[in-house]
Every structure is written in C-alpha cells, then in structure tokens.
Length: 116
Image 1 (tube, rainbow, N blue to C red):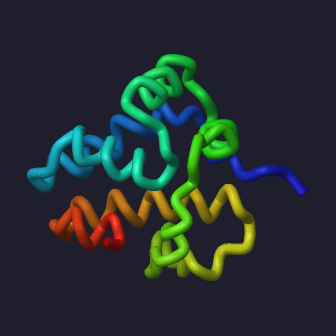
Image 2: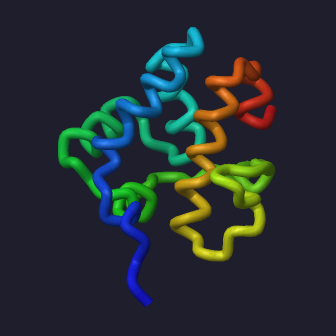
Image 3: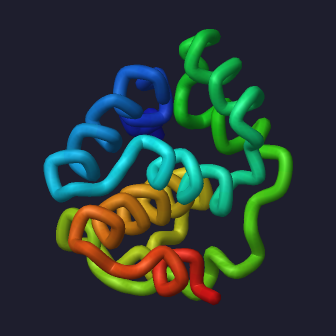
C-alpha cells in the first residue's frame, strides 16, 4: 500500500499555514510553536532546524525527541475523521497536531489545549 502524500510533504511547507491559521484568529506564532513543542518535545532550536532541513512529516514525527504521553487525551474530529480512531501512527500524530492548531485558532485556552 502506498504511503499517503502528507508523509512525504515537508513540515516546513505546512508550518506557515498553521501559523497563518492561528494568526488570523488573533493567536501567535509563539503559541503555535508551544503547541508543537508540547506534542513533540522539540525545543525552539530543534524546531527551527527541522524547518530549515525541510524535513518531511514522517521524519519530523519519527525524530521527535519526546512525544507527549498526554497526546492520547486529544479527542475530536479533523477532516471528518475522529483522531482517536486513526490506526496509522504517523497519520494520527499529524492529525493530533492539526487538532491542536484548530483548537488554538478556535480560541481555546492554552491550558485546555495542552491538556493540563
């Protein structure tokens, strides 16, 4: 079975879209970075290095320093699919990130987004 196209898409090509979505709703790039860091464990320098290397999504999540165990608490629908029901691990990580950015853009508090 062929890999989904998003796996080979560079994270750097989608990152500006995440930031734009958040900024359009009054949130900041720093908040997007905080959400990414919470999910993956990348610190700001590591995240910037991934962006500069134009790492694809599959590698971005495979190299993540510390995937947050609380990410399993992320529930809901992204693109018509419940994130908790996704069986493919990398796709689920991508959809977790999509869901977090959606929550940020919808005005949820950072405390709720980060499942505190």
